[in-house]
Length: 173
Image 1 (tube, rainbow, N blue to C red):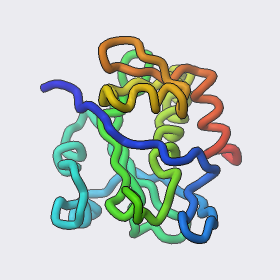
Image 2: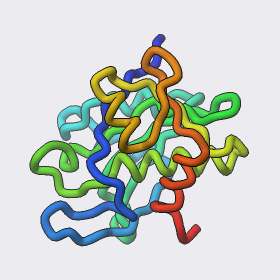
Image 3: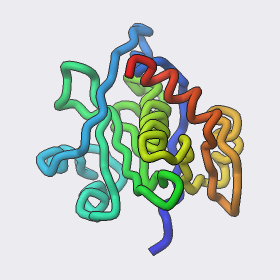
């Protein structure tokens, strides 16, 4: 089965996630997704991808982004794999209420990407993260994430760019 081509949009690089209307920032936490969370992540609830299959695949780790002290509301989800020498992002999705013109929070996708970079550093991979991008978003990822195109649609985030993201989102850790 081919790798999923990702089409997440980085709406803002924030220090946490930011309420679009009030401008208030909220500190976030990232946890491994639990089986019980799957009940909330359905197409019926507006999620676009099959997170159950991601969760059940032992080669993948699935994480949820939540606001501190509000662990039951998932702001976004991330599926990654630990590869040789890097972390591979299989899937990333903002919660349905964080997409489009009426979104509540911005900075969700960048927060999740920063977390993948953090895990890369923890594994001794020097922050290297790879993902396959939708063609129309390649330039967006180059400019916003400083990601580099290394193949057809394969992009990587190298150490310097990873350090910037981790420094923004996880400076207190």
